[in-house]
Length: 327
Image 1 (cartoon, helix red, strand yellow):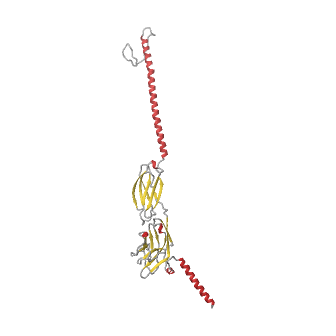
Image 2: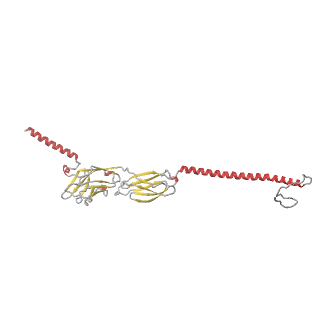
Image 3: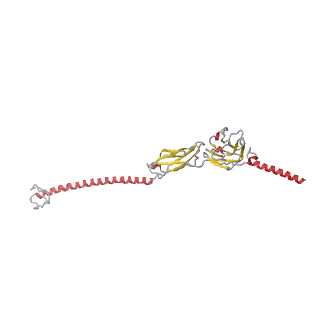
């Protein structure tokens, strides 16, 4: 008689202890009955600031068609009677101000779908959320299937595309893009920084074009593209070094050498001119006394009592005949 009583007490105690363990595993405001119906959702998702994330959710509950039943996503621990949901398809229910327009239910894409889409993610969005349906026949919170959303710092950086080789004086179009950015999010704002001559070109929601007119002195300078996500006030940037084609040191040295050669050429030409002038003057001075000497010899040859007959060279003017003689 005593043994059956002890067994009964032990079974009751084990049942209460097991119930306590189950209740401790459930979120706050979530009863043990919530384990009766479950969702197909991930335990956690991660997203970077300013970006988008989809929380995939499927509701296999045969009692519910999420496409027509009023549905909600709440924060963990919310009082469903008084607290506002973060997203809903119920036009009679106001959502939280901070999630207005950013949290959206994807119910009409396919039956049994209860997915939650978050855009322009903010650090304050980090937390756990649960799904609920509320119709005349079914009022159920799937609080046993919490989804943890983790919003991390933005670490992605822009991509800068430089087509071909940068040539001095030849304009080139450079493109800054953020292909990883969410297409459903608020479009980012692009800005450029460079010491080079630039003009802004066309842009799309996720790219910007800059027309660059490179100069030789722009070689090795920085070009920066900054992208700011206005919905969250977060900016990221990318910096590249401009590589303008041509060996600039060689060109500089070549210019110096050409200048030196040009200067040496002028100096040499001046020296040649001076030497020519000096040679002409010297030759002229030599001819002057020689002519005077020839005149004296000529006079001596015509005097009587000289050495006799004098043979005159050809083409020399003879004083007695008054004409030129050519051989």
